[in-house]
Image (cartoon, rainbow over all chains, first blue to last red; front, side):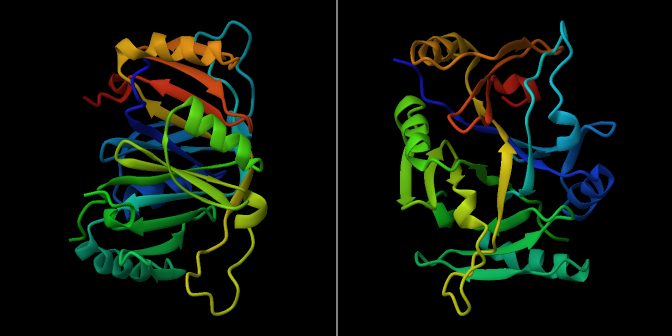
Length: 139
Length: 139
């Protein structure tokens, strides 16, 4: 029997302006930057996972024939979504920090199971969320 | 000082055919299904994270005025990306299982740091990857 997939190692969002993405995720959200490859991508560490921000205009290009690292093409347009894990008692502080930086809180929701999360946007318009892990019955 | 974001709680991909997504992620990949909401979304647990598969034709609709749960609209078109965490010694078994199910392995890469990962597609064309966590120096 094949072992279960252990978890999610990489999560991807797309943004055409990587300078703005780098400032937003690195400086404002405080994620540790791993690497930046010109106008193609910028990667960040976030807990036990990796957040990949790709410029879809670059990643949609197929790898050249005979490429040493033939990464398959991908790329989206529109507004993606992801959610950060934040301790319940830290949600207020994060809302205040974002609002102080001029990032509006688009919604602040108390879910039927009692957990709380709130939503905001990155500079590319992706829908980001901060949620306490109890939302999914995760400790 | 604001506490660091603890990790990534939710990762999202988009697929218009949720029946095919449910079969692929639930039955073939073996993820535990959390919920299915008609033609809007199907959610799965994966280790300490949650994989959300949304139908962008539905999630792009703004919430109705006065909605109890005013989730902001989002949705992408094109081919997204995410990567599962798989122990190095389980990568071969996963390749064999996928190929036996008629899912081609699009690339199998040995990265400069020695870690290995491989790529395949979900029924919607999203680019999925299985990687050993050493790719990102994660134990």
